[in-house]
Length: 439
Ligand SMILES: [Zn+2]
Image (cartoon, rainbow, N blue to C red):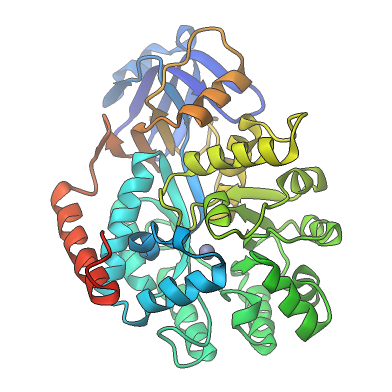
């Protein structure tokens, strides 16, 4: 792997020592950041790097992570606003789309979804769906980080939930640690309403035995809480604790409808929550209690889920707007905190166990250079507001020391691949939804 020197960047490091370095450098050897600092401290030997990238005062920061995503649902990302609830959308869109979903369609959808994510500086995804071998193959080729799981449920392509769990375990055996450790595999019981208590118990014991992660949807809509109270006599997080499903390896998407006691339980076990504001607003799910999660010590990442645009910065922007309007002053959660949380807990949700998510010595060389040149001498909070409110594209994306996007051009997903993927997806949408749909 070449030695890379990035010069003249404005470094948003997300480390505690020097959070912001104006006009700085980052020096990379193999897949690790060896040094960083101000241009005045640049050592002469670093200039002999194989590749020197002049970022020309742009923002250099750790790459973004989408901590809850369904890459294969990318083709139906624009269909949510016609439905007035999650259950209606699942019935009207998801189940119809998934009924005959072939590997080729999942693969093509993943190519298109990843191209858009990478365009916006995303270097890793936590993904859950079906046909996961096809998805894993695309991720292996593109070079991104990924945590993958099968959406375990009784329906869909599986004859039973046990079949789905078996497929998830096979995925774990085949793919956990693949791509030099960039890919990890978790178990994905879809949501409490879609699986039995016995299945949840089995997942809990497998998670303990194999130290494998768990990725679930949690309390996205009020119906999830009502179902749990009716069938189990307790709220969802209380049930998950009783079953042993709360741990540092557990990642829960949405978590919109939480009690304060549930927030305490999530904090006690160090579980990660993933906030997906666009889809929560499009399907009238509700507003996740981010300020309360922050105050209660629960870490949360940001996920695009299957929003109309696969961009983490757009999700952070939506979040900022929702919280300012819903809660009113004073500011309870800032752009800077949202960026920090999304990177820190997004990285945690990947379950890589490697230093990731900061520009610091010894950290993985996974960075994005955003096409944004902040004015000189503005505060760190102002820079973060600028990033979130203008949502610049990625000029460069580097994951594990590999340059994947350069000068805004995707080096690993070409135009021809995009064209072919679009064709496959368009034909499948026509097959499922008729000519009304557009890809
Ligand atoms: Zn989801």
